[in-house]
Image (cartoon, rainbow, N blue to C red; front, side, top):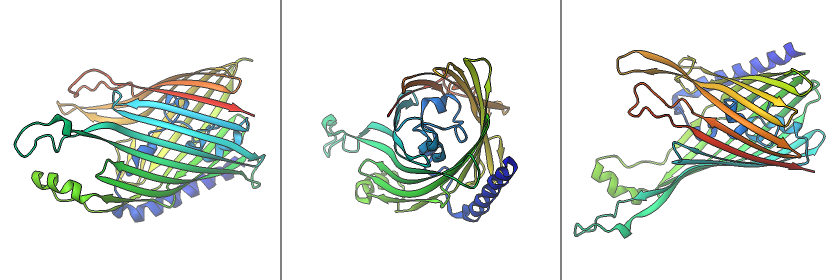
Length: 365
């Protein structure tokens, strides 16, 4: 049974690979990347390893098939994190509930934004005087709404299927905005202490259409000698994540969950462990130690990159992540520390910059 499922996962991966290769010439790299940062302190503390093990309200984002493992009728999850020393705010909220014993749904909202950006185009008036009261502030923000549905399959015992319909809105003050739409699909399979998962994002390619306010930008672009932007449509190519995890029972109260995700992208060569013009592979490894199913300690490694120093030598780097969590009576509080390897030998500043992620979840009947 496991062998049959593995063959199905490989077949789905190959189909996405071939369809993406045909569209690569017309699609930009790193399109809608704000949707790949991750949500939830548990997941980010485990280096974004969730494709096979997601089982709470965040499953609508990581793998909608995991919504069938909800233990309560109503499930709410909220997250807040600040990136780049607080410059960017990343927020997430989700509500999930089972419809019956064989189906479940969820609604999730994501926002990544930089607020209070000063617009100084009118700082100097026609007489050459500085007018500070002419400064206006605007935000650059990306939004996504995910509508998730999961259904238990009758083909294989333990097989769960899910899908997302996502609506994307991106805004750059009064200067530009974009609307997009895409579909994700996922599956999970449990066999004893083993968990398997596959998540195929943007399986139909996600279309994001940009509209620019040329009148607001015309003067600034001409002064800087740049061409005025034109309305365009971005295509986000499919991304496939294969995941596997296993739970080890140490004692009556102690257990450990070890999981890994393999992230396949098809939008060109990336700075990851295995890269080519057609396919790139980025591995993630996560660990969760649990005491009495109420106290958790987490860690993980991801974001492998090769950096070049000023002397021409190369460094191979991976990003460590850490997290802790407490769960009791349907209430869970999770904290994570991510991007803790900010020190670069060729960086201007030697100080590391970390991101603190806070998640609060509540489930009840």
